Length: 399
Image (cartoon, rainbow, N blue to C red; front, side, top):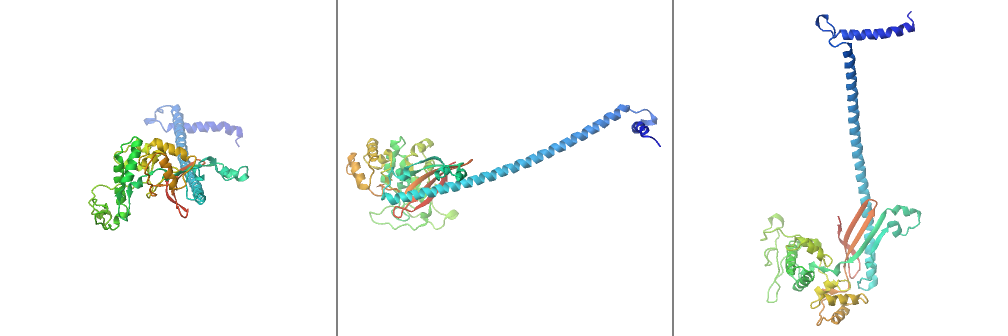
């Protein structure tokens, strides 16, 4: 038998013979020599091995890209779900803070005797505070649960500003008429702030048109007659006969233009022809839009608003009145009358529907920061003057 050493010596010869036979197959016609010699066979085999390696690398790279894309999309989806969870938790915290604020408003009304003034508990703002500290969990083990949640906010008297809804009065259901006294007051406020006073009437007409296209337009027009009757404005052309029972596309009203939307905020003044964004920003601290007509709270109103709603009073006298009010607030309308007379306003006749010392509408500004989720929300809250119960009128999130 052949030994191991003989086989080792024989194998290279056989491999070389096989390679020779493979190269012999590549001879040209009539048995000529190979076209490129023995080195061509080894070079071509190397190129085939290189192409195979490159193909394998391309497959691996493509697979890695696909897997990385799937992992990225999964991570984005997980992040989106986490953000939704954090935002929902922040909204629930904001709702809890709002309920706590409503409790403050109710308890304050129970103890104030129908008087709303700036020195009340409701007027104290809350600085940015950790929720765990706010709940009295300082130093406790569970304080870590609310360590990443912060609260801040304040309560604003909405009736301390001029209510644009007062420009249109409703003496009877289905009756909408311009209030001349309120239009003049708004005109004085615009003039004080350096804005064209003629925009007061334009604003009143815009508000009336928006109210005419609300639910009240389907009510029957009131009967009018006699020399002392008040002209009512219907949805048609102003003669009180434009009410219809066919709303929508079949409405045969004589209005040819698109009705304006009802005002819900001061920013709605941008829809009134003549107002600019700068003028609206100047009006924002002194003007508001509430669902119903409301009086001005003389305990919280600014000097500009007081000078506008009280005929014959200038801003300097109103500022002196506000300075005296900081020492002793008004307890009733009689105190307001005496203060106005002391300020130089003669023949003062106060209408309880225009001036008061109590408030029913409040703006609650709240901000909740829960980890990376933030909720900045303004809520209009109504407080009943008799039962002191509160309810949410509308909620608006600040973007």
